[in-house]
Amino acid sequence: MRRLWCAVVLAVVASTTSAGAQNFPSRPITIIVPTPAGGATDAVARVLAERMRTSLGQPVLVENVAGASGTLGTGRTVRSAPDGYTIVIGGWAFNVLNGAIFTLPYDVAKDFEPVAEVERHAFMIAGKKELAAKDLKELIAWLKANPEQATFGTTGAGGISTVGAVFFQKLSGTKLRLVPYRGLSVAMQDLVAGQIDLMIDFPATVLPLARAGSIKAYAVTANSRLPSAPEIPTAEEAGLPGFQMTSWLAFFAPKGTPKPVIDALNAATVEALADPVVRRRFADLGADIPPREAQTPEALAALQAAEIERWWPIIKAAGIKAN
Image 1 (spheres, rainbow, N blue to C red):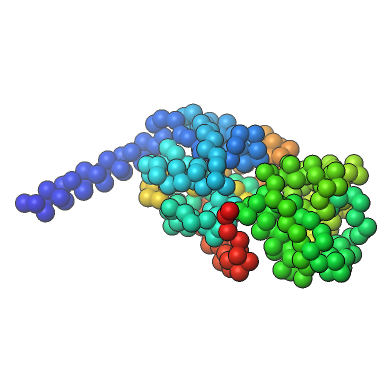
Image 2 (image 1 turned 120 degrees about the vertical axis):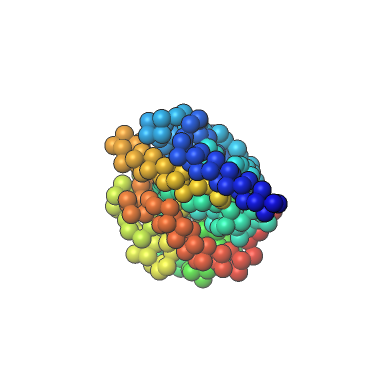
């Protein structure tokens, strides 16, 4: 009798879950942004939320849950009900790097359901305008001749820029003095002022300053030149083979979210990314939209696994840990 009762309860739960998935969405959806309002991640989420509500027929709200390098907002998503009504805009920093840098109460690979990759962008290696090196080869030669003399602005032990600096040193055979800042914008102010020598930042920030002569742009970290800056070589072209570092953003749902719900969220995301208005706004943000074949949950899962396999050994070998 007890077994029969358990079977009935399980059947009711399964039926309720299935019905909920079929009726999804029936109320507003919240996208958690694990960064403060006004940043690039927040901007991408808000552009997509505005368009996705048309496809989903429900309001799509954005909630900023910032702090601890994105682990607070990401962690809240893990603890949310797996029903599709709470998702997070995660990515390379939050769902790859943080897993190697922090001791987390969740697993970045196992506690989420991939929905779709939504954006990707490279970085640029920038230097103060007073540097004598006219290109990356000359810069690396100078750094090798002057170990630990050049300063490199970062956002601290858990930041993308720190990982980039460590990766740069490893591949170039140089030694830098890393200077932590509260954010890249503050570090860039000091680069313009000539207070630090080098940093890695977003093309949207570096290019206007480089074209105005305020700083130097040495290379882009993508595997090809940027359409918006064809005059800037890739790091590979400029003399640093293997230095490719591309960040990306993606939607993730809590583990156990039903597949029909994931499919509905994915379809709304894909439709938003195909919208000409969204594409123009992404271009204004310096964000590249991944190709259609990369926008599936399966492609996102493969991307995350490959990035973990690539970056975790580099981070752990370098001993990068959160302060």
